[in-house]
Length: 360
Image (cartoon, rainbow, N blue to C red):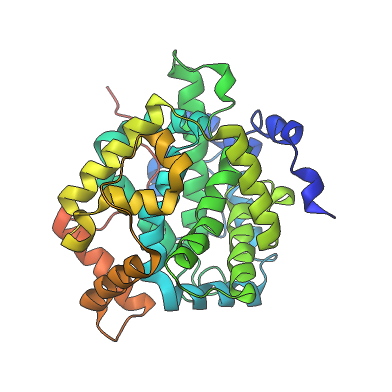
């Protein structure tokens, strides 16, 4: 199939009205029986036999994940995990300085994010959870040896469905023109930001990414997308297709919004207070402008003080990585550093957990 034929305004407008029926049905059940949420949060991995306390919708949901291991491509998983093993610290850096801010520039999708109190007022914890998600899904042996990653994806998919449920049920100011909360177009754009946009950021800094690596990361995120409820028929298989998807979503969604500006200001404030490397904290707006470019930066109200050159910024990130890991950078060392920083900042290592509503 020629994927480019799918990338039309009418098709993507239809995607804005589509959610994730499998997860949405499970969430309806969990909202009515919240004790099930606490049980899921206690799991270390999805049990082979789903407890009978859960009804048919939740049983069906988790059985999807228990059967998902029949569908992975071992070569795809190993290539993606090897890429992260070599470039994981830079990958996480791109996530914070490019991928997430890029998502904020897409106005309708930002309307969902800004309605989450934790993203605005507990941004450190939320970023910590996102880092844990990345570390879990890229762990050596993830999915084919380490089944924790499957539970992580199952929880993230349910968190998206909880967002849809609560916004539609309680957000009286939600405008239908925004589309369904956490819809298929926004999920596609977010997954693209966590994959192709990361690669683009590395290239902007002068890092060499060859075609095989690019396609390996796109294939890895097609697998992740399958697990977290994305309609993968729309997912790009090549850099050319990724460029076209990104171009279409930018044309449709990139514009200024109060939601986006609120999100980026919260992020900038957090970075200036929390990042221990002065070479980065003194240049936060400049770095964001460098990666995002003029159009997205203007939409978010980012005004740079100085123009940065990609090679210099690449050296700054390299130096920061060297200070943290020396010559012994690996997945294990990156995970240890992340967990140490979270313990120092939050008193614990962050976990991906489903929202538990306070009981009166």
